[in-house]
Amino acid sequence: MTVVALLSVAPVIEGSMSGEVAKAVDALEDYDVSYETNPMGTVIEAETTDDLFAAAQAAHDAVDADRVSTVLKIDDKRTREIDAAEKVTAVEDQLGRPARNRRE
Image 1: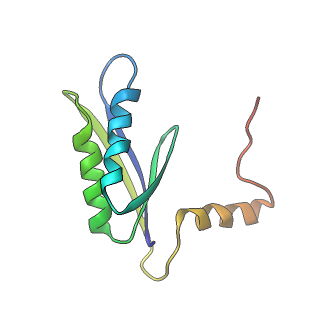
Image 2: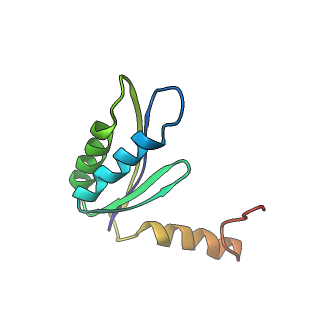
Image 3: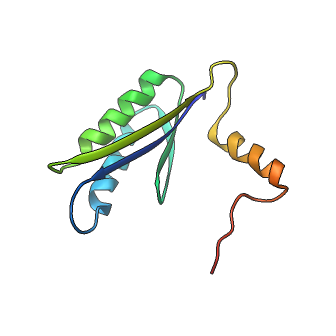
């Protein structure tokens, strides 16, 4: 996979957004992408920008609100194949440890 993106889709509403965010995440299932949701958004990997944009559009459209805020940040590495996990591994190699610290 060569296109990695961070997608954040959120309704502008009072109260919990989780139900609407779940609809956006669920919409990704209909597209040829892999994804992982985290507290700040969803990392998406796709073979092409066409696949990525189609999935992002579906996620945006799935949210039922009068106002929807969507942010899409794309890393389109065109010279070689790289996936999201490799990007994290490269940082961890530099750190010499996992790139996380979960405080209890």
